[in-house]
Length: 508
Image (tube, rainbow, N blue to C red; front, top):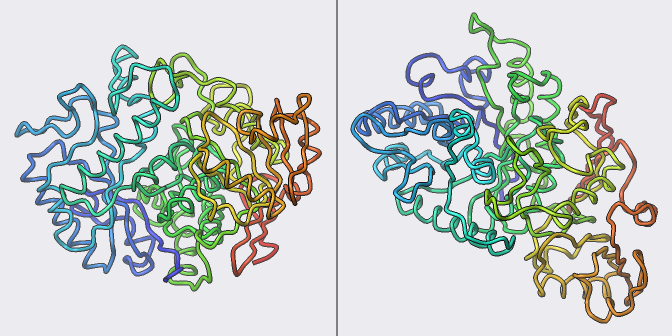
């Protein structure tokens, strides 16, 4: 199996057709690129014209010897997506607003034989924040959901309903000829639910989150569901592009290689050139990376990761949203389903695993809070940790030394798997009382209690911020200021710079 990292860049259909695309300047005419992520904006033309343009773009990439992923984002910002010949690209009879390409358009994208996947840009954002950009345009008086919601207050019921909708949506696109589908996640949620239903994880670096926290969550999904792992190194920070330095971008690209991502690309190539269309510091940094790492041998990828620490939880789509207007306290975009203490537990765990570097209440600088006034950092302390969902199988847990069971739901099979690993492998399992095996739960006394079980032990906690818990797990969480990843054939250790944007490789 080829373990090489595929390197790409983000461009636009109008650039490829109408002018010299920026990737020609930044990657030696495409020869230092494996693929492109190309934004398409078809709704302003007839379907016939959109199909012809799609064929031209695909053929252009084929001439460069490149694959491409067709990215669609226009529907996230436009309520009226009806094109001149009457076809509606997103609005559906049930009142939802979800990208809806015609089959012949996907056929046109596929004609040159180099289409890898469709990409629904920020789909998780559109789901959990109800197509927020459109809502803002209508001054918060119009809500356009991506999928229908259930009349329920139950987290699991709404989550499983969304899961079935994602499965159906992927089938709909594949029936039209799409080879695959991925998202592009602003917020570190729904990676597992997407992956469970065949939509491969694509996490953002930089942006408004810690890059390696996004990786830990997305990598867990890719490992659990045996999918590809893609990485968007995003130069946007809030409303600024570029909002990160060339050095930070370069280090995020190198991190993607070291961490075993299967694909990496930078959003967007327009930031690589100045107003004279000449390469700037960003373009030069990207070119330096692509020249060194394109085709570079690597003995592993993310599926060879041997995690030693894991958070196991049902992904309820909570990342810390707390604002009554922008980021409402809704789960899965359903105003009846609200986060509570169970939703926040994993945020407390991340605060422990990062030696206090992450916020106890959120995983994004997008959160409206005093904590978000801190200067953004790409990298946080983390010692070989991933996140699995509440349905993870035993074979994915064999290398664990420490795990945390939290959130709304964990399957009986997963709890049984953890229990057997505690007894047989010496795993230390930290859990709220609701996920403890009955015979262990019957022995619990007090708000913090450790109970030996075979070679390992269970730790029952009422509070995942407990100082006793922090002290107990110190042997498992590594050294402050370092990132460590252990693969079957390699160990990667990185020392994070003071500003949190770069790192030094200690071990590779």
